[in-house]
Amino acid sequence: MKDLRAILSKVHTEKRLLQKHIVVCPFCENGHPVPTDFDSIHRCDCGACYKVCGNHSLETGVGDIAQQLWSDEELDFVRSIPIDFCNIVIEKDFDRLLDLKQTSDSLGIERFCKYDINVHLSLVWVKRLF
Image (cartoon, rainbow, N blue to C red; front, top):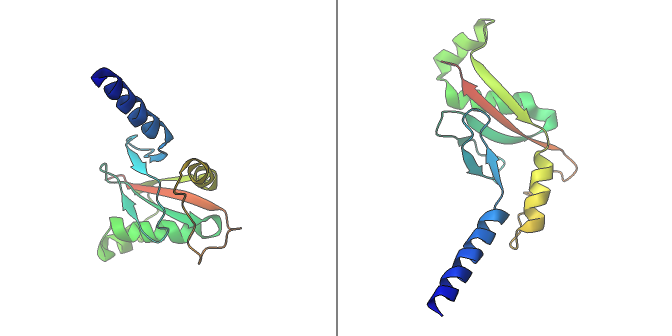
């Protein structure tokens, strides 16, 4: 009986883990929970930052993240020189991941009401080069 409980517990845990959706950092491949707070900027252990934003406001999203990565003085310098100071990755299928998560999650997630359901969302990653 004890062995059966252990097996059932293990199967239940593995099943829960399989249903969990994550986003994967494109720079170090660490997994993170799917962000549901579309205003927050999230940080990976490797130093990259990521944020959810509408496809129409990608430039604004990158600017928001840049303000987290550099001080005001550094940001002025970065903007004044035509050299790449960061890597940017944009995942344009973020809506699809939200749909998968909502379908499989018994609790579900909802988009915040201030976001138009018709706006396509992307996940923007930015990492400093040095």
